[in-house]
Amino acid sequence: MAGRELRFAAYAPRPDARPDARPDPVSAVLAEATEEDVPVLGELQARARGGAAGDWADSIRRALGRRQSLVVTAKIAGEAVGYANAEFLPEHPVDRAPAGYYLTGVTVDPDWRRRGIATLLTRRRMDWIRERDAAVWCFVSARNGASLDLHRDLGFRRERPGASFQGVEFAGGEGWLLRADPPRA
Ligand SMILES: CC(C)(COP(=O)(O)OP(=O)(O)OC[C@H]1O[C@@H](n2cnc3c(N)ncnc32)[C@H](O)[C@@H]1OP(=O)(O)O)[C@@H](O)C(=O)NCCC(=O)NCCS
Image (cartoon, rainbow, N blue to C red; front, side, top):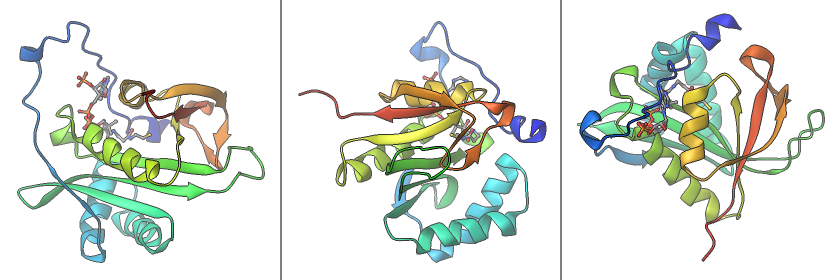
């Protein structure tokens, strides 16, 4: 598990938040992934998170084939620089994570991080979910500070901690179930 933890982005909050201290945001093109994207996304995921590209590709292909599931790519000049998933999951029989629409993963190429790409991918998935349900769910390792801040900034609040949600166990043993509700009118 320690090896997987190394694949989280190093936690580097920006306390001064000066706009001129940020790299330029990029405008990536977002689109639903197709079968043609799968090998490249498998390689991107293996580069960013370890493991075998072929195994990741198999899992992405399965996600593409599922109903009530979305895979979105972010491309710059035609090259995939990130991708993310969302899908409906029933209540988990063991850890009791509730039934609902979940953000189930987001990865950005290490060379393109801190430019707002995960934010774009997450907003797109939240829009897709909100066409189907009010609540947006996700779960994040308690050790993944970058992801916790990303989701906090997008309106997620901490529902409860746990050793596993939807059958996924966490590096370090603990994660958070997060939930975002629509902004009040
Ligand atoms: C987490 C990850 C997806 C973020 O992608 P990104 O495109 O760099 O994210 P964004 O540029 O949209 O960042 C939005 C906000 O998230 C937070 N954030 C992102 N990376 C961070 C980091 N390394 N440290 C602290 N906060 C971070 C910040 O609040 C950031 O806003 P800011 O840049 O104005 O400070 C990326 O680091 C990644 O692929 N990590 C490995 C895979 C992973 O952990 N996925 C999440 C699994 S739940």
